[in-house]
Image (cartoon, rainbow, N blue to C red; front, top):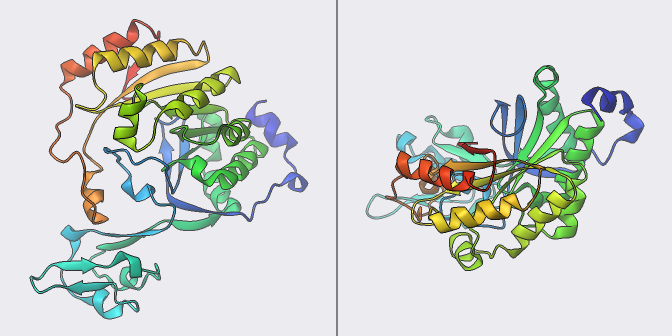
Length: 321
């Protein structure tokens, strides 16, 4: 069904539970790398994996979180003065202390931070709230063949909210996509896929033991869900984040490409995503240690070699997605 047919069939009486609330940590507009055409990306909080290279560590927890940007702090002390829970303090050596377990996300520190060094990541939104944001760029979806993509974190962690949003988007005639690690119960995943036009999914490592070491969980469920999605006839884009010293061996890329080739013609492409360190500062802002600190991105020659290995088995292989 085209977007025009869906739009014509949409009736207010058909609405799903539009008042259901989910936790969203970002909405990005005019994206062109996360599905067909121009898209709006809705990022949901929560993830079952803890990838060592995670570029969005603020997405791991399903709850709102406080982020402090040390390089912006001017030391005015207003956050200490205004916080009703005494979350902030200065120790005897002058270090700034954040007792995160005390934080209730009231926002007083954010409101009184002159330098903008404090922010709360994650806000509660209803389905209507999300769709109101998404609808703002309907014209661009219609002219470019775009739509809405739900990402994370891992959007299936908020399965019911995600399903409501996908259903509502389809009722409004919008193309839908999800970016997923596929680490979700298979029956839940199948329900979600019924209202998903395009699935963009990662394969972190083909060896289950290595997958567990790198992400905290084995990969059998991930591979089974990807296979099931292909069997359902869903359009797939498989993504491999190429992480130096973790999954960038010829053997792993070859195994990944062989698996992708077995999925059939519904796979649109295998995307190799070279490692970058743009997300590392976020770990510090959450008072966490970045596991891959000091790791350099792969050389261009290495990335091209992996691309060549994958092309032996998969017709469409891209670098960067």
